Image (tube, rainbow, N blue to C red; front, side):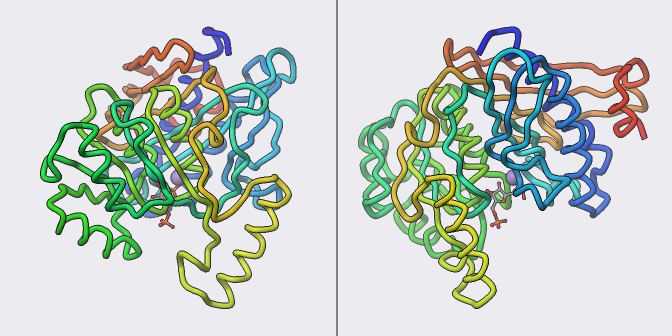
Length: 337
Ligand SMILES: O=P(O)(O)OC[C@H]1O[C@](O)(COP(=O)(O)O)[C@@H](O)[C@@H]1O
Ligand SMILES: [Mn+2]
């Protein structure tokens, strides 16, 4: 992954975030997502590369999403695999709430595990606790191991968990252990990255969220030297054993078989992301703990992007001011309106 190409990817999440922002607070998460997808696709196709989406929002029949297997780029140049989440926090964008961002990761041909869009149990820690996690052990035991490695008391540990009903019990248990729980309504990509940033105050992220988000986050975790373990879980095991959920789960299992990935088995970080020669880019849509949100005044917009190169572990924070009326690419019509 050459350096010049790395910078190009920051322009893609910038455009997708700006497109999403046009739908801020309008209560329509699909419209916001559509706009981000269109901007992302348009910008991806302007890059000189032989690109393929390996982690996306769905299958070919679910267009207009950036679908798994979609070819992007000019078709010439480097072979690049791309994992995208045009908006992590579609609901936050639609409701004008914090912590929505646009994110992607790119690497060489076989860099990313080809996880379909399903649920994934995730356990993430920063570089200081690398090697201390084991998803086969109870979460309480993981917490004790991490605390002792960090030289912290339980009361000094901060753990981020998605605030979903399925996590109510684990959140209560952690709090009973004296742990500080940061329960976030959505957006576990940002939460995962926060665990691994040198200035971050989050010691661990735990919980069940989206698998695409898991693989995208794993790219940043690998680039930053953190650690993660994960497990793909079919829908009926997360959302209730109904006929409908079992039907969805059957399709998920089939997709896993086609892609050669195992469900209900612990996956290591190295299995999720096989190489650290990668790029991770995230641009804030609404104000967040990881990156600032967009500020817009008429034709002027500012963005903050976190761009990480795995090889060198360089962490860039790019603050951009966009004069939207001077952008010549037609995709900015989406954004100006
Ligand atoms: O909302 P669910 O079904 O519990 O799924 C959790 C997932 O949804 C999110 O909170 C938001 O994701 P989207 O905005 O892409 O839908 C993710 O960060 C998380 O992994
Ligand atoms: Mn998402």
